[in-house]
Length: 544
Ligand SMILES: Cc1cc2nc3c(=O)[nH]c(=O)nc-3n(C[C@H](O)[C@H](O)[C@H](O)COP(=O)(O)OP(=O)(O)OC[C@H]3O[C@@H](n4cnc5c(N)ncnc54)[C@H](O)[C@@H]3O)c2cc1C
Image 1 (cartoon, rainbow, N blue to C red):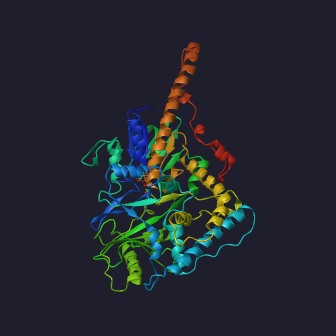
Image 2: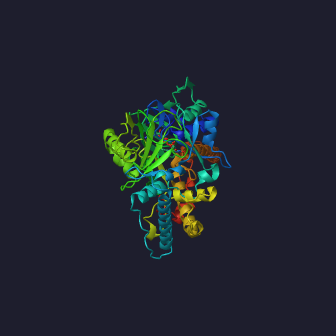
Image 3: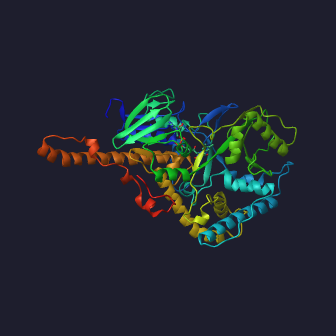
């Protein structure tokens, strides 16, 4: 099977995880790698576009997790390359909630609604816990008024609904910085690529990076992997690192021969895909309030998530006259399916509700379509909190932002601190522990290699899924696992050579097995057996 075009490793995808994986391989002497990237650029979900004279970050915009006891590696990369950033604090948004007539809700009303939303979330947890204990419990009342719906959206959808404890904040700190650099967040990837790919004047000229190569099929065996791309090219390698997103893995873009085992496909299916859409609007002049505490504002509408969360770009790019509104999930899909003109009209309607009829029309709009992008199929992964208890089987996500809020309240002395935090914390203890463990287990299934195919990407990060640093660290971890596997494989080869060759040669004088055929399949040793046999995540027993 060896051929001149066979490489040691093929990396599929040139997002942050693919590039960090490549860097680690190169640092460890694996130079004969190929990177196949479906699109015409590196970066994946780190992507800037010039809009209204500045760099609009369509994908990742923040470096989340700064100022803690450990240094966020992405923050370090940003500091090393002098990336311009600005501090961003969206906790102020709650003081700027507009109703449909343009009035800002008095802080007391907003605080009441906030407390109600948090209480409802506690009830939800209690009922989840009761269900776990086999009791029937009352369902919490759901948000109804526009302000309740807006707050519910902010708590549950705006940021990531993460499994607590939020490792990013615990490990790296709670501060967040918005990238505000015309070279874009992606500049970090080019700097990383410079370490192992040939570049000139900021361009990657290395022919090991192959753009516009859409991988459609992976044929894998104990001997290696054959990779077929949409344009009819075929590549061979000893190993593959696959960094395509969880949304892509859930789609039919890439087929596997033989198919992936059921434990793998079930784990992939169980991971949720979040859609997060930042719509950019350019105006001839500013008509929104600026200054301290005004960067973010909220629109309360009777339709949940309807153009709710707004941000102005004056802190990042003063004088840019750009607003960004964030939609998620269902609203993202709806807007992706309509024309930009329709979206502009809707957004202008919302802004006129808030700021009156005389504001100017936006002169330009930018609507990213992460869901319809077949190389992404969503924005980032979200590991549901799951349980093997049938009664709570359908409860997928426990919203965590409010937990974060509570956490921050404790630390900041916020006046919105709600009274029964400690009761809540106590109550959720057991359930959180059980469910959190199950979620981590699910992540380890998604991450586990299948034979010679190694998986990487933010969705494979147990601790930091959904983040740039999750992708970055996952690439490093996957490469290290692969290097370890390569080392073991070498050992196995020399052992089997010693074991098979000498006596067989002595006895028969001939040898029929090739070295690679003589080594055992890699499948089984890589799977955390205790996890799937324990059935903790409700997955069927692994079939390999
Ligand atoms: C709108 C949005 C906002 C976000 N905000 C933040 C934020 O503020 N802070 C933060 O830390 N994170 C944020 N994230 C998440 C962050 O961007 C991702 O976690 C991270 O960039 C993922 O990197 P990755 O390498 O895992 O995947 P990707 O960047 O998706 O890289 C995978 C690559 O694989 C390629 N590919 C896919 N299929 C194939 C195929 N068949 N053949 C060849 N190549 C293929 C893709 O084109 C892509 O380039 C955001 C993401 C989005 C979309």
